[in-house]
Length: 421
Ligand SMILES: Cc1ncc(COP(=O)(O)O)c(C=O)c1O
Ligand SMILES: N[C@@H](CCOP(=O)(O)O)C(=O)O
Image (cartoon, rainbow, N blue to C red; front, side, top):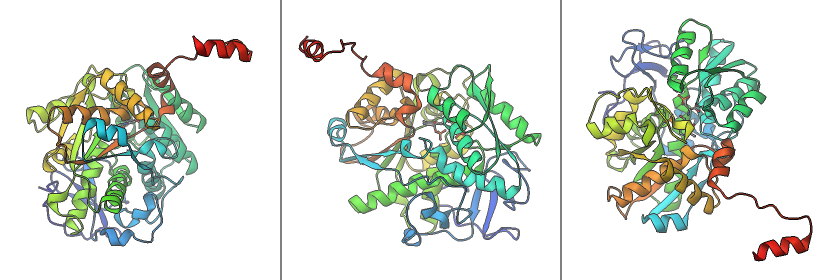
């Protein structure tokens, strides 16, 4: 099976472009990467992956600077349409580490990317591919962050952008970003999954180039999250993490991190036994991946009614499930659902360590806490939690989780009096 951790490095087909090609994860059909616009397999409509004739080891990244393009040897280009994405912090959180009770806990804060989420890593590659293909309009469906990143990277690349958002379900900061970066914003009377259905149809009709994570090139950029975490742990602990815990929506990151690890194994840079356990976390009201993992199902059932305060992961039909399910299973990971209250508690805990995240991001820490309490995560594990978006993305959720401002009179005496109350 091509998505197995122990799969052999594939042979390059004759029409590979500079050693890269697209390959169907199901039927194995191969396609030249840039000859045509293509998101899924022409033969069986399954998901595609980018494959490479030569895979890098960690040594190949040495001396390349920091950020997504440090990992150019693992990507289809040497450079992209860039706003200096990646190189995000891997924070220590001593109080949380102690309270949750693991050997080491680090927070990979993707909210520190240029537009405040991990999507920038995918867009720097995806928008470059769009230029290569000569398209002029880019589009996405979004719960907010993809639209913000697409708008920013599209405008940087001098391209028109169109975003479809579920009306009333996108956090204020994200709409503001898409708007100021010049996207045309359509508010759809439906949820994210309905928006994605429409964008896929528009893309199939040639109206725009789709830059959701269904696009295999976007996931190439997102692989670099995994590469940075591994390099960070190797530098600090001389070993890779035992587990990476991440929020799951459309399951792009789970798929991308798994691909990064498979490629390292195939290159001989990582032992199969050392691959971190990919552990996905969803909100209870939008947990189709958790359901599939718990039931041992090969396919994910689409949830039509989804609800959670963590609007970024309010997704009922994770399009990357066929890549992400093997990622969780082959790495011996798991998936867990958490309540909105558990998410808010984790958001406050991260804030008390100085790390500001949006609700969906805090799901990773909430999930780790739950799995540790259940004994599924051991106390001797070294864990990285991914926090995917910045606190300021969703100022309303932050204000609701924090404390209210206290009105005081405009004189020092009045302020002092108030402080003593
Ligand atoms: C902040 C945030 N966290 C997590 C996710 C989920 O990531 P993925 O779709 O890669 O599972 C998203 C979007 O999907 C997001 O915007
Ligand atoms: N949370 C996402 C949902 C879309 O995910 P994508 O990775 O498929 O673009 C968003 O920010 O829109």
